[in-house]
Image 1 (cartoon, rainbow, N blue to C red):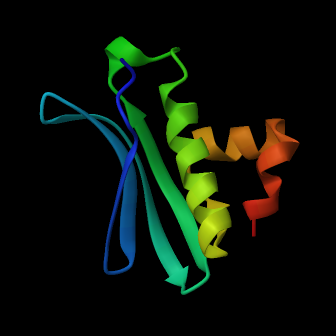
Image 2: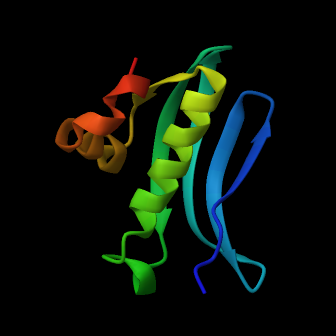
Length: 95
């Protein structure tokens, strides 16, 4: 069973994350710069899960959220930046 990507936002900081047995095993963090803009800061995946598409699942959840809420992202995260360069289909949420 694939674990769900969850989202939490408090103040101007937020994250998309995956929990397993109460432990955060993957996360992508962001900070809001305005009501309609945010910067993806960091992506981290437990070493045991690397290479399994988990980071991309976090990014896909972030992109879906951005589309649903009319948010544009910039990226200070090397993983997210590389994905925005590689995949034209998600660039609509890029600031």
